[in-house]
Amino acid sequence: MNKCNMVNIKKIVIAEDQTLVRQGLRFLLESEKKFKVVAEAGDGIEVIRLVEKHKPDLVLLDLAMPKMSGLSALKDIKNRYPGTKILALTFHSSEEYILEAFESGVDGYCLKKDSHAELLAAIKSIFSGKNYISPAISSKVLEGYLTGRKKIKKKTSWETLTQREKEVLKLVGESHSSIEIGDILCISPKTVDKHRSNIMNKLNLHSAAALAAYAIEKGLVAK
Image (cartoon, rainbow, N blue to C red; front, side, top):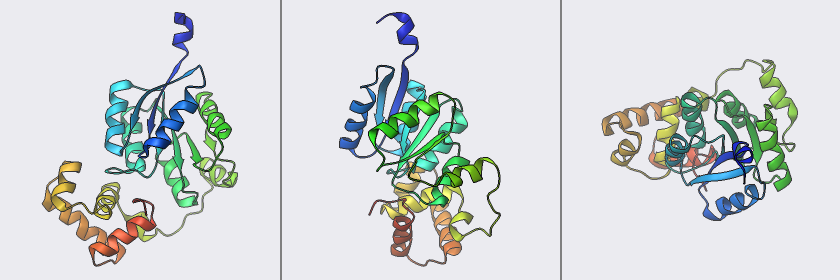
């Protein structure tokens, strides 16, 4: 391979918690001569570390991952590496998730039920400088966001949670203790308990089991 061809190869990091899915995605992407998978991440914290290490052109990002959600990782990556393209790959097709992802800076949004051809089309579209959304989702959702026509509505209880509170909620849903959550997020257990209290008040939930059920409902934790 000559140097000219090497310059055009796009570096990709895959962030997906299921090993078999990651392997399948790697095989698919590397069937395209212009794509090179430089690393794979199994959780939200690891993908941030790998992006810092490899400086990829694109991250293929599952929005539901252990330790740190894909949305939190997305915001962190876009804040630190705004030039890195991010394609969300998820089961979630609700307007709420789609809009939050685009507001967080995602460049494209694909569903896991989409075909391999659609996934490759999404990546190529993003590299051409365009936003992409799965054909399985109404294009009106993206158009409404990009043109600023989304109706102003009263915030739901979910929307009142800060990003940090959503991170804590996810980890509570994964049955981590306050000490473990503090270690993962680099905050004190006392701060974790304060966040937990705020979450309960905002959501009007009163037990760890209720928080875990809510985290599953919102897709923060796998069923």
